Length: 491
Ligand code: NAD
Image (cartoon, rainbow, N blue to C red; front, top):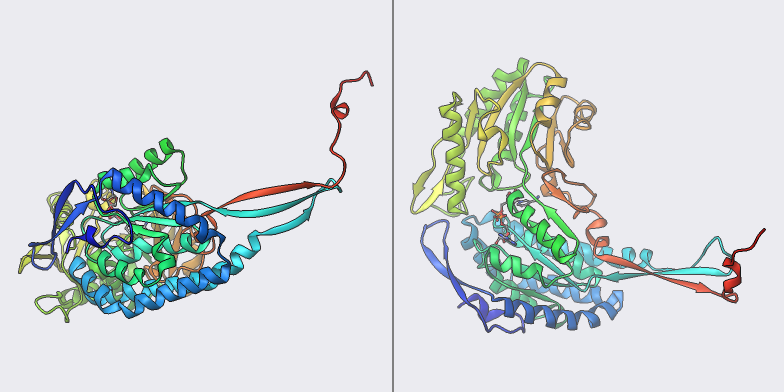
């Protein structure tokens, strides 16, 4: 079935380009994607805008009820959504986790939205002028656009969409062309809740489709690379709409001399290689205090060598294939460049082709210098460069170099010591005595620093509040002032 066959209640005509989609486990194309034409996107946007008026006028309770029924429908369809997502990504356990995460996400926002929206409505507030009072009305943007990447296709298509819906907006999503299979079962489940199906749609396609979507929406949420994020920022400025940009990272982990080196090695390994390292919050460089470097590296290389590839059995192993073929080439090129410039590869180091899929064992490297792409560019693969430092000041300087500022991690003997150093890092979130905690902690706000992003936090309450504008009704109860009040006079 073609993806466009299952668009939720919107026009499907005008698909102009078909893209073959590669299966990450077989390397073969087994799915075809029809790119939505600009006319299809316009038609979808028009219908969503019409339906949004009703959605925004519903009571908080009605919206909550619809969102909860949607979560239940996704729960019921979990097996088919997870199965499609597994074909998209080549990994099964994380696909199960993604599906479970989105229903938690929907239930959390359904519970939180009424209170948040209620606090934004402020009736008859006094002002410095006794006869004038104000009433603040939160007004949701009519149509929010979402453009998402391939590394966590389901979660990253819905992480901004759900709070936007809960705020009263309609949403139009353009997922990555690399991982489009999950859309069909998701939309089938969505159709079981007509109120949601009326205000949520998906258009499939590539970069050109994403660019066309930006022209139709009132707010754009983009998750992806810095290079594309820059283009989206320019397009959003031209369209005069706000943009939330969640971009790449090169997260450092600092391991202080008071940390347990064996535990630190296990944490560094997990935080670097989950999802084959294809996570924005992956640890991409570990800075280790020299006194514990030897036991740390021994434990890390031992544990890295024991990691099992998730091949050939889908149900066994620790790391799956690269989702995106091109990513395997980028990672291999960074390893080769570093090796050519003098770096040592302690484990892994070569992408293997197995059954058509592309796999890489955890690759621990030392002897790194700043001129290597591995040390300055996002890697997005299971590679763990290890660099030694002598003082905490040096660790802070090293961890703060570079153009990314997404998140970081600090491991130490005590949380207080780790926090003292963590507070000096130029990033939006620091995991203390763990790694990559932003992958599971979504309740509190955080910013993206430097080139890792722009705009309000997607986490915490601002994840919803950013979709509301404020309309102020200013009530005058006295007679309006006459012009004479402003007339010039000699006094
Ligand atoms: P990408 O930038 O190549 O593509 C992302 C999306 O943008 C895709 O849907 C693509 O079709 C679309 N797109 C491409 N060109 C476009 C254009 N000109 N206008 C509008 N849309 C366009 O990123 P990717 O390779 O899919 O994803 C990997 C990147 O995403 C990594 O850099 C990773 O760090 C980042 N990421 C960031 C976060 C975060 O929360 N900060 C989370 C996950 C992934």
